[in-house]
Image 1 (cartoon, rainbow, N blue to C red):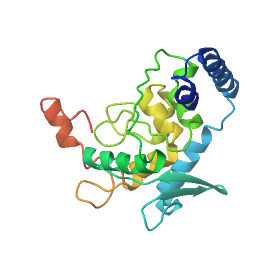
Image 2: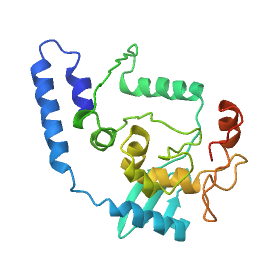
Image 3: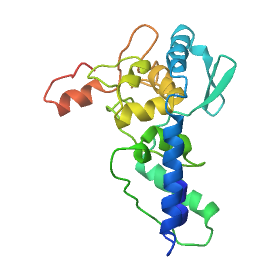
Length: 213
């Protein structure tokens, strides 16, 4: 649907075609309800907890999750500055539209429903799509005031947990393999659920309350 908005949204006289593509997208999303194997999240997490080696990293830090004869791309964990993101956007612009001024479009997709479900949007997005979603100052978005296993996110339909479940292999990387505040360890290790990077930030924001993180 996002690709249709970009392709047709700025074209005069294309509203009918755009609405037809959105209607088709919503119908496909609704038809897919209940078809997925949500149990794979719990099985995969149990495997990561038992053996973090099922998360494999290449020389550039890109991760893959290998389980049950399947392989998922799990991304690369980075903490990129705003300046770094701008530089990447400039370099990308040279490749996509060399010699042209950047063109920016801002879309607001409002309302609750199949058309705005973040998990479906992620699943249907084209190559190169970027999603900015909620986080509790530690690159996770647990559905409670404490860090919980990723499988618990399935019980929370709000944006942050929903987006995390939609891309659960990457969430495992952030939860079990991302570097801690000192560059070593992880936010949540095999020895128990813990956070090593966010407590001070949260305590300052909440007047000394740690919020259990």
